[in-house]
Image (tube, rainbow, N blue to C red; front, side):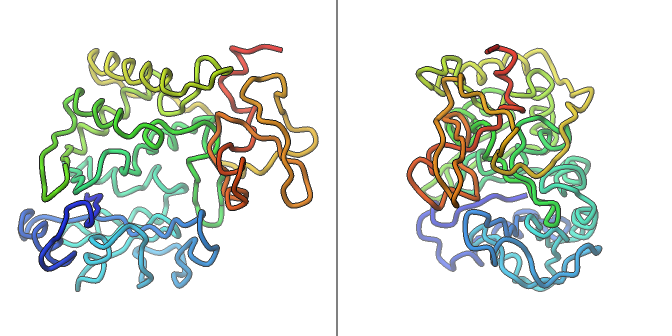
Length: 334
């Protein structure tokens, strides 16, 4: 499984096709290469949000629409024999003898990264994850255990597209502080890094990465969702460093796996209206701000919301309130 950035490598003679050829040569005729072909574009134009020419669901996707994950995945997708999984926004492309086995179950996945995702088969086959010119924050499957555990801080859900936006309730550790997560994975021994071209690249065993994710989520289901301990100052760095330290402590005690779901199944999360819980007494509350003829309550500790971020200003800095799913409710009584 490859996550990549061609531009980070510097000049590559032969371009993305040369990079793909090098990887195919490395894995050999018996190896299979898997890349993201995501159409996830909720931050952009609606017509680019999902694959539009696939009669989902089916065993494999016939669409030839491009993905939005860079030049290397697109070069692989265009190769003869490449197959694509059937998911409206988060399809994967694979080439090699295990391609169909990796992809065909994805049509049953109710969310982008949860059950049925090709990552599960990759773990079963004892595969690996190559970070070519990128860091661990680019690995979308950080959300795998969040989705199967049904954690309360999941973002906006589109049932028709089986899509989740992961940037609304709370702010995500790997997006706010990718360097911290890179060093945590190195310290845990699940990530090896080295120079490729002008960049630093990495390699992880899928089983090791899966075990690490399972362990940190079993120890603290909120470990990837940042909330500053002192909401008056809003310092996310403190929470990020404390959670990084806790991840390594949990990992040092051995692999653990979550025992049960938290029981917050994906559901559409829309801007709150009359009757929804809004904690105006919370220091993270950012006030009410006008959008579309209504006043929207915002939270400084939440990520931006896809319905409003294009408005700019405070909507690009704060997310909508999600007080009914916030872990602070137990720590900050009225």
